[in-house]
Image (cartoon, rainbow, N blue to C red; front, side, top):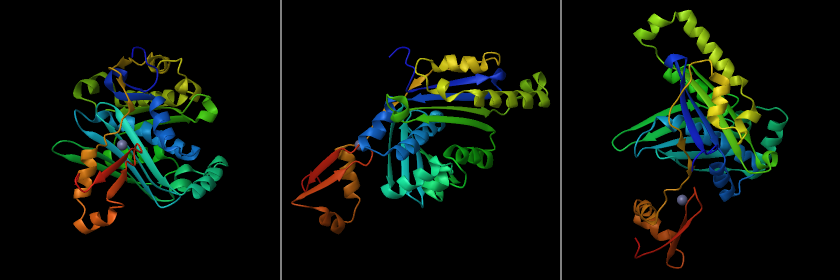
Length: 300
Ligand SMILES: [Zn+2]
């Protein structure tokens, strides 16, 4: 698994710790999630963007917690969910009206904004599920792109200055499979020592330069599997006191099991459950991976 250039996330610091960043590049993970559902290209693009955002935002979770990004729309796409465990297992699915999505995609290709075209309105929410507590954030889908909605969330709810760049290429562009990459930079609150080292004007200038450099990364560089992520970051930030942390890998992984399906069915009222039986069996498909579970009255 040495020297992987895709399906990894690379955390870093620049400017003596004034800003922290994450760089992520996904390939196999996206391919698996999108192709196992046989999603059309526009849904693939939205899944890929959401998966990259999930990888960036989930980097804060620890141990056995799970991070979920969920989008509920009122337009052609009614639901999109991606979740990721602390050990990098990611999965996702979407619910949509195929004809309406195809029409929206035509508009997007002519320059219409993504979020209003596909989701019309609705919410984007994050949920962190830990052993003994949970945390949730929510933002309205009222900006042109999913990245813009996330930036607005950080600005309004967290008051953290954030810069974000996402690039996605479908198989029709890469001749390989789905590829996506994202870069995120966040300004950290500075301590007394930093305040003694830099003036406020210098800190603002460093942030401005750092975000300018982030946006200078090209789509080609971000998606080029021959270019390791650290090399890309080095190109961008070699003169900004760049410091890397340990990279982590991401891969597709579903957590469904017969036991979980049984527990879910047991939570339904007895009468509803009885109505689900067909020829003495209940068939349940996992919405994430498509695996079918067939249960009998004895299982329950
Ligand atoms: Zn599953």
